[in-house]
Length: 115
Image (tube, rainbow, N blue to C red; front, side, top):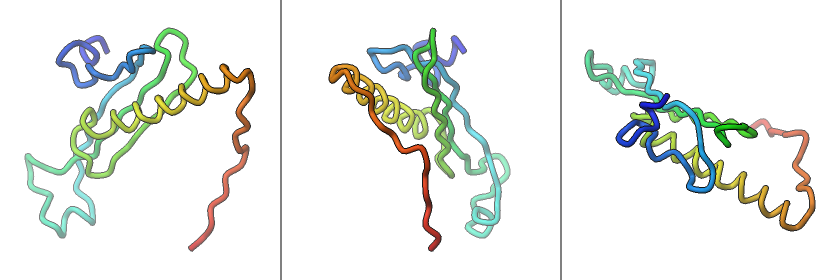
């Protein structure tokens, strides 16, 4: 993973500045029932899904986030910023809770409504 985070690596800009982030970018070529009729499935230049799995802090992880972007191209360009923004929100909420000396009550259940 050192090469991923080195200058010029696919996740070289993953760190948030205030916490060291670990993770891995990914790109997965595909040809499915959506891409095929659109003429995207050209051998040698298939469309690609983008993903990034990141965790922080690097030395003692407390959060792991995986972003998968359908037809997103390169993982470092599309999925990595999604994870960064989510981590920023997490650490902001954590800092706010700690500065207020209180816990944040998060929902324990999620509900989805059927259309």
